Amino acid sequence: MIKKRSDPLVIGKVIGEVVDSFSPTAKMSVIYNSKNHVYNGHHLLPSTLISKPKVLLHAAEDFTTFFTLIMTDPDVPGPSDPYLREHVHWIVANIPGSTDSSFGSEVVSYEMPRPNIGIHRLVFILYKQKKRMQSVSVPLCRDGFCSRKFADEHELGQPVAALFFNCQRETAARARS
Image (cartoon, rainbow, N blue to C red):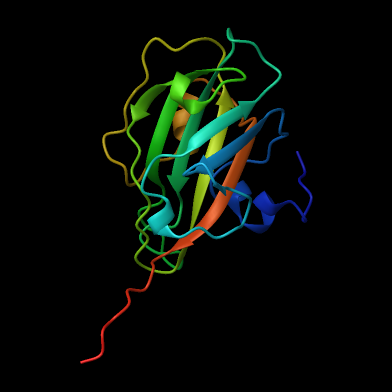
């Protein structure tokens, strides 16, 4: 599958570094604090990411079709040397079609992003499940996670949607002495 060079997932190197090229067949909206929408390549501050987002599925599916959502950071500990790639922030499985992430089963609890070095990409990947999963293996560690391997182990196939945003450490205001 060849993706266009103008695709934000290609420009942001999400396709290639996190997932293989795929054809989107579903849409999702990611919203933090009821007002901060995630758009590919946009920047969000860590202070706005404390609580887990609401992820709405806009799939032309019914409640008998299920999806798995992964949120991952491929730039840990820093984008110039991401030797801990990937860091998994959240996994939700068995999300019924045309609902939102709150209807699924949280496999890995949400962890807010805390980038220390450089600008990090936070990636949301949506997979369509073949059927409702009875058991999902929990990663032993958040660092060194691999979305592709997780998808293979759970027979999820290629993603059906993906979104990413950029995030970097906020500078603290310092009082002059």
